[in-house]
Image 1: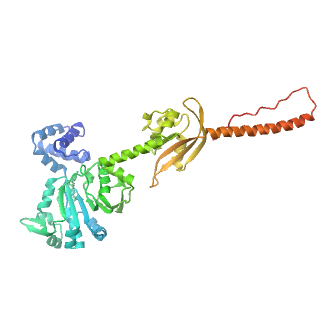
Image 2: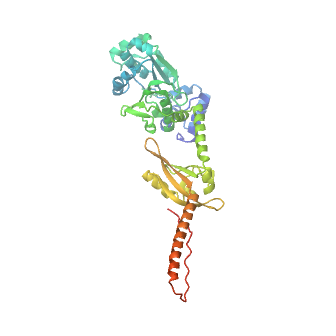
Image 3: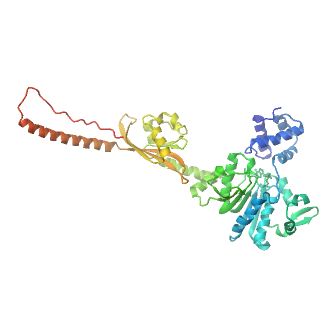
Length: 458
Ligand SMILES: C[S@@+](CC[C@H](N)C(=O)[O-])C[C@H]1O[C@@H](n2cnc3c(N)ncnc32)[C@H](O)[C@@H]1O
């Protein structure tokens, strides 16, 4: 049996993407493999490559496999306590605003979630305003589940709904119960792949429950960045009980962490917004961000003062042109851990001041750092080491800027020389006064010439 993680399984996943456009590459491997393995066992196949061959011959197998992988379990008002909270705290706030209300139930499966939201809003707004003002987009990657949402529910499937809600909002058509035709207009069902498609935007409420949980952290992060963009500044996001937005805590604030109800962190600056969009896959925003980053890079690159920047992990982020020449650092060193590079200790110790600044989060200056320029000329710098602290108080890096103070040092040297020669002249005067009353002896004496060696300030 070779039903284990590895290249055979990855090839199979790539085949599903290339042959059928179903991209499972961003799904957690554990669940995915368990589901495919189950199907292999049902067919008596003992390897993923055998199943790959099987799929190539039996095209109807795709539907069976997708049905296995896409777990459609759902129900009306799933996790009742959470929906009660949303009914009490979130729906009235959204209903109180003026104009259109936009809701997205993403990964809606067979639609029970979208109809639950519809019922809550209809209760608060009344039928006329519900039809007039509401748009509920209910999407899923699974067409089969969506067609069930459109065609209605069996007695068993609708059994969990209170009788009065059943009567008020559903009508019987043959064996099935469908949402009342008169109230259907605000609900729009459609296929949407969260991992690939652009989000629905300008949302007041985004419901995405028990769907992100199947995806890998990076894929979740990308989708959450899109969700952030999709929500209005005062919009709400409602996730499943087992889902977390910890990796994107900066984008959303919990209204109730346990119940997984969040609001968007509003007023993101244009730059951050563009970066989010770029992260969410927008090519235009990507270009915009890349352009802005390039302008920032060039601004530092061209300054006459050598500058070095490391991130909070000690990785060399940038060395401008003047610093590259002065410290003889190739551009290719950018991206390496500074401590692994000669630059970290030669010609100047950079490790100690960086460690100190990271620890104390206070800028420091080392004065009179002497470095030999490319042609061997000694240059004296003041080294300014500054912690780079983000708005949320986190340390994101350290910047080291070297200000050339050679002229100041030479003036200081000149001043020091003049001071000493003045003092020497004074000494000479008093010496000559003394000598005028002095009787020559056999031993001669000469005053010491003052030194012009500059002291190196620290
Ligand atoms: C467990 S159901 C959750 C249904 C409902 N949200 C709930 O909490 O009761 C997960 C749904 O996510 C859908 N899904 C999985 N991957 C998806 C994707 N990439 N884009 C959109 N929906 C996806 C599945 O088809 C399935 O219907």
